[in-house]
Image (tube, rainbow, N blue to C red; front, side):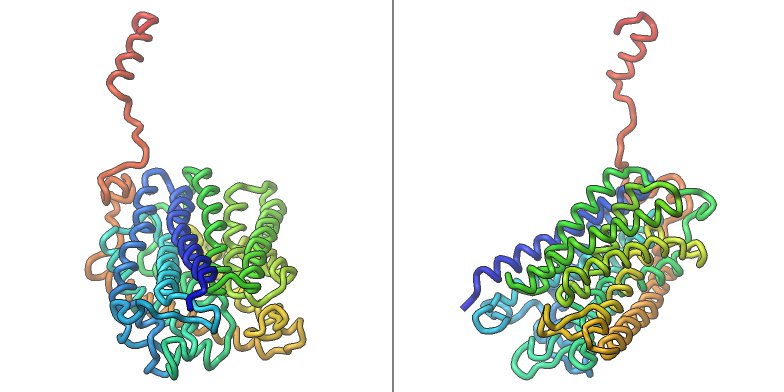
Amino acid sequence: MIDTGDTAWLLGSAALVMLMTPGLALFYGGMVRSRSVLNVMMLTFGCLAAVGVVWLLYGYSLAFGNDGFAGLIGDFRLAGLHGLTNTTVGPPGHQVPLLAFAGFQLMFAVITVALLVGAIAERARFWPWLLFVVVWVTLVYLPLAHWVFAFDGFAGPGSTGGWLVNKLHALDFAGGTAVEVNSGAAAVALAIVIGHRHGWPRQAVRPHNLPFVMFGAGLLWFGWFGFNAGSALGASGVAATSFLNTTTAAATAVVGWLLVEQFRDGKPTTLGAASGAVAGLVGITPGCGYVEPLGAAAIGVVAGVVCSLAIGLKYRLRLDDSLDVLAVHGIGGFTGMILIGLFASKGVNSAGADGLFYGGGLDQLWRQAVATFAALGYSLVVTLVIAWVIHRTIGLRAAREAELDGIDEAEHAESAYDLAVHPSRRSMAAGFVEGGRP
């Protein structure tokens, strides 16, 4: 019997996570210059199409199919989502359609690769980027999703899943490794291969539309309830805990980020508030279902402070990670994964463990560290190879002239803002000059 309440919650959560990708497009689009906003939004939005096709053909099967390679990757038996219709998953009394779960996880794959747009904003070509998306999701995201999300027995009786969750027993409720640490490491690799923008860092690059940034951050915050609380796979007490922990961490992270700005720069900024919220949401993602609300508050404020301070890393490393994917998602995800080893409590979730502050010693802490560095190292190395091959063969980066004159026109033959004066307006203005009245 299908639990209709849990199914409705999972489908609604999938829709919320889908909304995060257009939200991210607004968030990123507002942070770049006006001549690049459409390209950035297209690179982000295009991930919905490219990953959707991959997920149908073989993506879900490799991520959640039966493991045959020592916990590294699934098989192709579920390719085309074959056999998922009228199949359910979940504990007795809380069954949900497997297709609902497949749709939910599809949105995770989409938003993960879309995050990488921030590392190469204002200088990437559209079609080579979509090729990169397909290859990267196949070789990087799907294995990591299998490591973290594929539990033993999920693909059927006797089936085996990924090594991080089943052998190492690392805790990652909603994607601190497969989504956040993964995207941060991949962003570094992309920025290394594609190089910095012309004029960076001498030329200041200011956001062209801060209202876009704030609205995008609000949509991300809204969608993150589905991202985190939806990972409980049902309307349960753990989902409620995850829901509250999500907004608590975002709130305290905003405070932490703005305090850093106040002491460092003398003013709190709207860009800082939006970035701080995202940093808190990133930081709580892996532990949202394993920590108490006070623990979530602590994780949020630490993530806000650490990520704000990490913004300066790209200047010291001479690495043009345009929109700070490393600082916010990489460092934020790393922070959240490690802090689980301190704040996790089995009183919150019996499927979890006790961290150091709850009498669990260092046992969970080292497991979290191993999982984090494994995801970081794998993503960094494989992304470097993928990006280098595509960049050297068909060219991932736009030409210098296109970048300087406006990549929107060069790649899409469009501009975000039509600033030309309409002929009737032009004649009206001339009438005012000549006779005082049109």
